[in-house]
Structure formats: C-alpha cells, structure tokens
Amino acid sequence: MKNALEKRFASPRAQWTALVAVFAILWFAQLNIRHLIPSDEGRYAEMAREMLASGDWLAPRYNGYLYFEKPPLQTWINAASFAWLGIGDWQARLYTALCSFSGVLLIGLTGARLFNPQAGLHAALALGSSPYWNLLGHFNVLDMGLAFWMQMCLCTFLLAQRPDARPAARRGWMWLCWASMALAVLTKGLVGVLLPGAALALYTLIARDWALWRRLYLVSGVLIFSAIAAPWFVLIQSRYPAFFEFFFIVQHFRRYLTPEQNRPGAFYYFVPVIIAGFLPWVSILWRSIRRALEMPRQPNGFKPALLLVIWIAFIFIFFSLSYSKLISYILPVAPALALLLGFNLPCITSVQWRRHLIGQAALIALGCIGALYLIRFGNHTRTPNTLYRAYQVWAYISLAVAAFNVALSAWISRSGEPRAMKRSLVLYAFGWLLATMIAGNAHEIFGRASAGIALIQPVRAELAQLPPNAPFYSVNMLDHTMPFYLRRMMIMVQHPDELRFGIEQEPHQWIPTIEAWIERWKNGRDALALMSPALYLELVARSVPMRVVARDMRRVVVTKPQSGPD
Figure 1 (cartoon, helix red, strand yellow):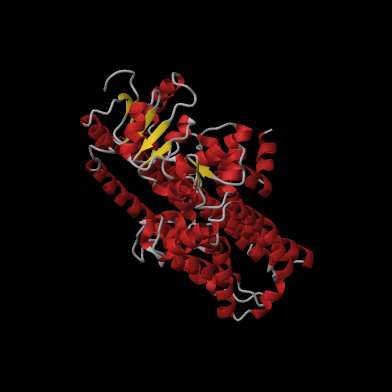
Figure 2 (figure 1 turned 135 degrees about the vertical axis):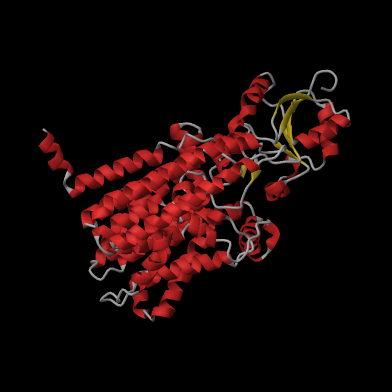
C-alpha cells in the first residue's frame, strides 16, 4: 500500500495536482477572515448589492446615486455572486480571488509552453508567493481584475506568437487576446487597451519586428473587441448624455494629467512597491531580466523576453508620470516579472541561492527591528495604540514563519543537487505565501475599527424599530462600509465626496447644507443619521435633538428622539 502511494505521488502529474490543491486551499480559505475595509472593498461590494436589489444591471449606483467612475464588469460579477451565493464578505472577494488564483495557473501554463515546464512551475511559484499579488488578490479591488485580464491579453498573445503554433491555434489565442483586452476595458476603462497597445507599438519600433502585425488578426480581432466592449458604452451614453464627458474627460484625462484627485506621489513612488511586492525574489529580479534579454529571437523573428521587459517598463513609467497614484496601479507588471523570474530560477546555482537566502535573513532581521516601532504608532482620534500593539504580535509571528522558512530552505538545498534545489524553491515559495497570509489577515485588528463593525448590531436593532422608509442621513461624510453591512443606502448631506456626479444628475436625492438637514431633522419623525464625532459635538452644542444609537472613534450614529435632545 505504501509503495503504491509513493509510486502514485512520484509522477509529475500527481505532484502538480498536489501543489495546486494545497495552493487552492491556502488561497481561498482566507476570504472570510477579514471584514471589508474602506474605501474600495466596501464601495464595490455595496454597488453590487444595490445592483442586485434594484434589478438595474445597466447603470451602476453607489449609495443610490449614479456612479460612472468605472465600467461595470466587476459589479456585474459581484452582483451575480451575491445572487447565487448570498451577500457577504467572502462572496464580495470571490471574483478577485478567482482572478488572482487563475493568474498564477495561467502564468505557469504560459511559462511552460513559452520556455519549458520548469520555467512554468517557477513562474507560478514566483507570482503566487509575491506579497503584491497575494495581498491584492484577497481584496475586493478593481485593479486585480484589470491585472488578470491584461495578463490574459499578454499571455495569449505570447502563446499565439510561438513559431510552432498551428494557424488555428494562433487564431484562437489571438481572438482570446482581443476578448481579454475588451474585458479589461470593461473593468477599468481605456487603460485596458492603451497599455497593451502602447507596449506592442514600442516593441515593434525597438525590435523592428514588422511581420508581427500580420499575425494579429486585426479585422476579426477588432470585431470581437467591439462586440464585447462597445454595447455597454453605447447604451449608457444613450440613456445618460453626461456620461461621455465625465467618464472619459474627467475620470481618464483629468485624473491622469491633473492633481485634482489628491493622490500625489513622487516619480519613484512605485519603486518601493516593486521591492516590497516581490520581496521574496527581489535580489534575483535584475539577474532574471538581464538573462531573459539575452535570449535570441524565435525563428519567426519574435522576441518574447523583450516584449515582457517593455511591458513592465512602460506600465511602470506610465503610472509614475501620473498625477494620481495608488499602490495597486502597477499590478499588471507582476505576471510579466514572474514570467522572467520563472525563466531564470531553474538556472540559479546553489551559491547564488545561498547568497539570496542570506540576504533574506538579513531583511527579516531588519523587519524584526522595524516591528519594535509599532508600539509608537496610534492616536486618540482614529486608531488607538492598543491596535498596533496587538498587530505587533502577529507581525512577529509572520516574521518567525519567514525566518524558519529561509532556514529550512537553506538546509534542504545544502547539497546543491537539482532535485534538492527544486524542493527548496517550492518550500520557500509556500513559506512566503504563509507568512504573507498571516501578516495580511492580521489586518482585521485594524479592519474592524475602520469598517465600524462594532456599530452594526445596535444600528440594525434600531432600524428594526423604525418604519422601512425612515430616512438614513450621511451628514458631511461618506462611509464606505456601513451601507453594505447595514444593507441600507444613505442620503448625502452637504459633502458629496466622490458622489458629486451622481448628485448633479439627480440633485433632488440629497440635502445641500447642514442647515437644511437640521430643519428637516427637527420637523421629521423617524430618522437615523451618521456623522463624525466632531460634528456630533457641534450639533449637541446647537441643541439639535439626537439620541446616540452607537459610536466609535470615527463615527456616531444617532436617531431622532421622541422628546428632547440626548
């Protein structure tokens, strides 16, 4: 029996199946550990909930207001998840988790067919263990969906350009490439076509590979792209004439070219993002890029490694020049970096690997020193020091796992034999995946406070005592998680925040000043209101009648008392 099991798991297919199964368990088991946090997670979950509740699958709404900052693909899929699986945290994250998980498998397939099976395995290990891909793959954000569809576009393009690809296979891969680009556009707009198109144009100029354009299936590809991407834009513009200017001019060109979004960052903003995001492999990155560039052209003249480097460089520079920067913006470079790492990692020598592990041990030691300073963080208005002290414990547990992983990887690879090196690399990747999981999911210590979870039950109890149509006001603030957890939209008061466009289209759905709200509040009967603690104190000083239902350091929820102020 024992010999039969050993023989069964000695086959490459069984080993691959076991690796994927363990990876899948680790990847999906953590979806429900944390609550959704502001702003993206709560926003996109609530938009999907409202879409499902309203039955309007054309025009996305947020808090009841038209919301056209981004196209609706992820909202559609999340709403479908809620319809099939129920409304909750893990359902809201399922799509991004599937995208990130599929991205790891896709990069493994691409590496195996483009280079060799070992390159595919190591590319998958590099991407799955990178904190950048791992962490963002477990948040309900648009950038992971965009990164996956752009990765699909890149990988299918690379597979289509293989010199041994049959005409039918090449056509199929290219059609899938065009379809993926359309889905990227439906995820986040013009960047879904601009970034791949610009990277291809730059590659053509640099490599002088003009023959490539004859293998793009331009006519049929454009038809496929248009059939998928165009209908929603045409329909939404016909129903809401203000859409075009807001979506394309404001949300694309002005967001990129002006600082009005208030997301500044220096030109080198994304350098630490890459370093931290690929921390397990950072010392090998440059060697991997340099070695890949030494690859000769394929028999058909195509240079896949050069395209990968141009893809990475252009996306990095494009967003570095933008006036609006967020950590997640350059996520589409991660699969390309992993593919270059996968090409190089099987060739790494035992000496190079030992040096890398020594460097990792030094970084972990620095992390331990840095974690000491967590006890100095915190304030009395939003995030108390006790939360940082609690997180420090989990930070040290994560660092301990990483340190043990480095030591065990070094011990396994001590002989320098190819099989030992392979086992060491696999263990090292899974060890970093586990360490990142611990540190990332421990953020729930902060997440509960930022999401206002302690307020949900008392507010729900109060809502149960009020008429279903009782108004719920959001006074001079927009809370990104409370509407989702309360399953209740709020009427904006005075400060439109990011809902300005929707409010301009339907101005009757909001209250423009606090003075007007106070008058309505006093004259009304049953109502709730959400506000900041500072505003609550101001209103108490003005004798506005209020009874506190629940409060925390960031928000206060009040109801209209039947007699007298609180």
